[in-house]
Image (tube, rainbow, N blue to C red; front, side):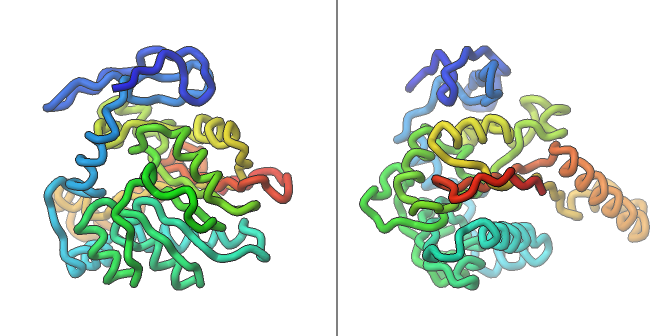
Length: 305
């Protein structure tokens, strides 16, 4: 296990933020006093994490799903499909038109993002440790994910115009290694996309360490736009766009408010959608998506969505 005595991103002083108590262990979470990056400290070993994710994947531990189950869940709440279309559309608006369309999807999960990229004309290379998710991605996206961690993915692989880290950097044992490696794998002007839980969300502010995304050892890193930008700029990237995205499945309210009937549930879901949009506008949304360019070809002001 490795313990940090200063911030791994900006080398500033750190202090205890919270101790997250779970059924198996207590995890100390420190926070940087300068950039705001929060992280589990000390870190679990890489071997432990590789074994953990090969079993659990992105979902419930030891639960294997069929493609029919995955598609049914997505039909009821098309979160991944909507996000994939938005992210690929934003990439296309940022990426220089004269570069190749090669994309590396790190931790591709069931393959929704890879499928959208393939549909948009990208040559996709995907990485995924979990065997159940790899199998579904093969069927869903017509890709063959490589069962290897990003740490072990060869540096001498072909270079990419886009690297996607969707809901994965929060799991990384060494965030500097990940961003440095992404830089080495991107072509000049290439785009790095990172989507993860927002440490400055309204829900985290209210719930503190009890917020669902504060869940070590699954999540080890807790980023806001400020700390994520600091990490990217440290490695020579320029942030081109940022989005805040919040969604709660309608089913989350059905059991609690079923007594209101269909009209009442419609009203509650409408109010929920409006509130989440307001949180996103205020940059307090559940997720933050950052698009950064390697050695940006222009120096325009970053876009805020």
